[in-house]
Length: 280
Image 1 (tube, rainbow, N blue to C red):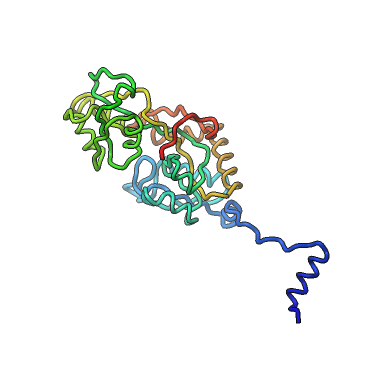
Image 2 (cartoon, rainbow, N blue to C red):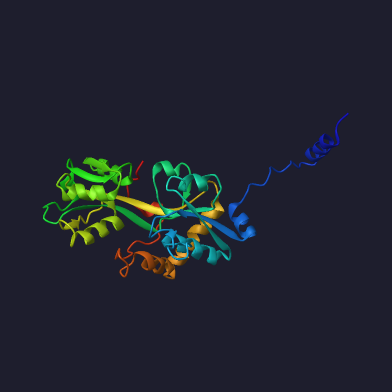
């Protein structure tokens, strides 16, 4: 005897109707329904995200960015501090909705998560002694350059066909240049800016080579195959760019009145309009 379910199915087929597949989950709809946007940030990497020494509340550039997006969506922001290594897995596994943690685009990361349009270009920069005659990164091809071990800075050195001399921390890499064990040090713009500024009164003065060693588009990470989510994030970033909110957040944590003294010159730009060589 045919079951009630099989008879119903046969009836639907006879009418030219087929059963619809299960509806696909929509992460953006879930966020709007629960009225909460969950963001992963660094656990303790100022000025991007770190606990305030007085209140222990998470503060920083990326914290402000998450809260600004949530406010524009009409939902509450929930900040989840994570380790550097957990930034991609947390969003890939759906434990958070967005990773806003100075997340640079690399080929391996792009296989695991999708990226928003970059909202700034991080640059791997080279600092050398002030009296060094070199002016471009090509002047340091084949030369020994210091960096932290296992970093994108080390990758940038190798991509320049230079010889990496790596250390566990930036301070040790800086000392290698001061002691003439390396021609220069490679790190992100913020770190190099601080090193150059500090070197004017501490040790041997250094200067930054204007040409970047590598460009790293920084975007917001989210789960793959969520087109509505990607579109909404990109729309929000473009709106924040247009009304100056992204620049205001930048200036609060990284701008001319901070210790980093960095002017924001990059703007939200689709990947299709960028020219860069992705790191592996």
